Image (cartoon, rainbow, N blue to C red; front, side, top):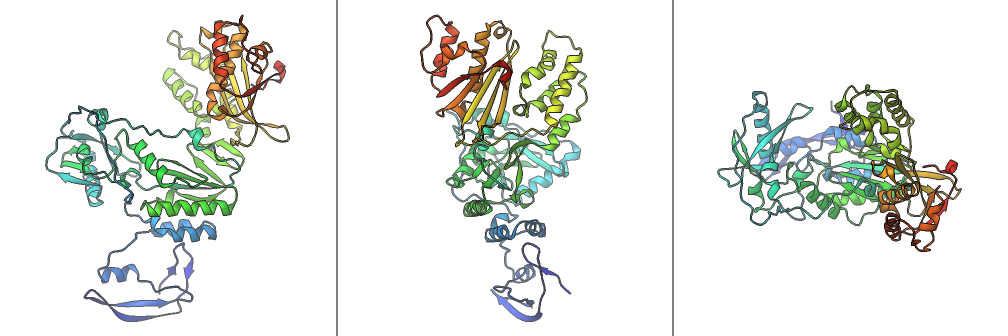
Length: 522
């Protein structure tokens, strides 16, 4: 008459049952216990905890257990060892409380509550009640600071409350010196990775408490009165950087791990290496008393979606749903719809060789002096970029142990560059493409200057990969070998512009190589 299952959903067949009186702190009741084979230590169920007036230590849904049942058994054991991180209560970062710093001479700003649409009034009230009950905010009678709220209707029908701090607190906050990492830095250690896990933190910012001095600054004004946040909240300009610093401190020293605010990626060349790192990450999160949203996590996968890209052992790919959205875009009817299309395409421009040259007719349409006219060249450009992205391009992972080759080229209208790895079999695999339309002034350069600018553009674009590392520089313009080659010194007759660029390039360690135009892949 009862169905039992373990944490990850595996069925447990009881051998029998018995009922006994149980007493704790003057609370008495009769509880039924089920006997199972190799069941481990005795367990007290939620019903028993409730009848004995005991607080439940963790709230983990049945759906969480079902999710874990789909991962390999080795990972199941790791998840069970650190099951507290999947508790559905609000986590509280245990290392220290965060502080918001004001600029000198800051003056409190008090703004009254804004009138709410009637349709959102009850939803806002429910959200305020939830936040107060969860200990995320608290009511206050008076405050020197007050910020009106901006209610945001979410897809599930609930409402998120955000303070409009851009007009009150944000202009007076000291800017943080901590920077969010760039995507190229986050994904620079994926070489040789074959196993991936993605961990999503639950209610990221609100897991970090604010110190007492910072809480009055976050006071919001609502139709129910004033409330102040006890924890870091959305809308504060420094919140992303502050939270990023917290997460990097929590996970510091663990190899194969990248974090961008509430998204954590764990990688490994083997399942053993990946699982060891995953255990380290979960242990660090548990020690920091942070919580994870189980239904948004993925464990031990052979590929992972991260920052709008798919990563696997082969490299980096565009996501199918983003490419499908580009493919389904209708022909733009005006400048606004064209900007929207180009915005979607630009996100994946590193996958497209010579993208600037391909898209030149479309960018020409956006010039102020250009009258809207969708020409045959515009249609050809529109279809070409879709075709390239639909061909499922792949970029290889950057590997610091492999040789680098930078190939550059220039035309009358654009410059292009390809950063690639050269493998032991002499094959070339691109890491990223880059291109740029030349300005009207740059189009008037002599050909040697345009080719030189292509080198400067390519090295500038990929300087994070190239700096302090020896690489091969490939051009199809032989005169540049005498100007930028093997530290022979810049000829005194070279133009000032070339001399300036030669001085810039002297900071990099490269060997220049000249190929025929037909062999230039850029």
